[in-house]
Image 1 (cartoon, rainbow, N blue to C red):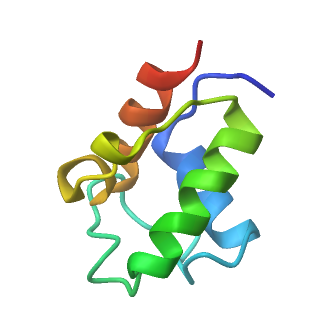
Image 2 (image 1 turned 180 degrees about the horizontal axis):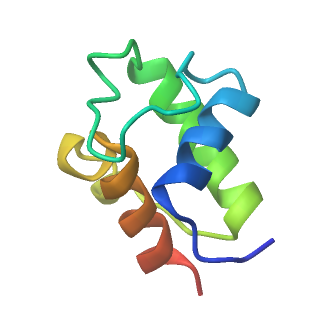
Length: 82
């Protein structure tokens, strides 16, 4: 796909892939960890983001600050798309 994702794309990806059970209207600044995302989900999320968007996300990028909200995750993915 290699598109720049929006927070809404991220929510859709997390729901579609069964990574997190999020409402369609989950807010861009909603806390994904409070919504149930755990360390296993983070690993799955990285793989899916790489496949879906062509992003290259390394271990140093997987800090909570980059993964806590759909908006932060969308910014991370966008910054890692070649």
